[in-house]
Length: 176
Ligand code: SF4
Image 1: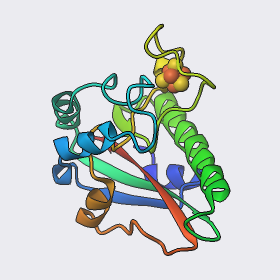
Image 2 (image 1 turned 90 degrees about the vertical axis):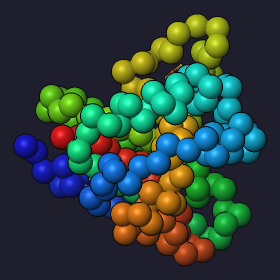
Image 3 (image 1 turned 180 degrees about the vertical axis):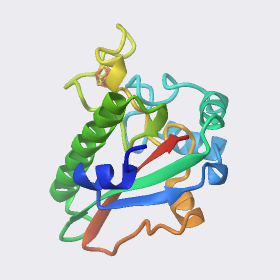
């Protein structure tokens, strides 16, 4: 078995911490937050609700795995209005996540990974007019799957908030 934490750090993740899959709660309240569409991705991407699948689908998929990791990209920002810095850290998180999941596939690992935020691989998502262009790179976010991310972090002893001058993007991995 490869050292997943070392691999995660080599891909650039700041945090690679154990997560107990039994702590995951797939909640309709989180879906309601998606439906409020504050991130303006609801109903606009294959990676987001309602296209990404029902909560029960994700809960059932997750039930096949006994181990997990919380992965975080943490970067600097001037304050909570520094959207430029937050976008840069988000893009870095997406690069790290895809490098990590590509490496896991090369290793032949059976896994389930959930990302942070809507998929941004294509400048314009094909949803709903045509199939996803890159289904092998499509990983719905933890929120899209119904997970309350700060709660998952808390339940596993991992920080979620790093202070006003830092921003963290959180993903997770499930495996056996
Ligand atoms: S890969 Fe492209 S088509 Fe597929 S979900 Fe992402 S943006 Fe949409």
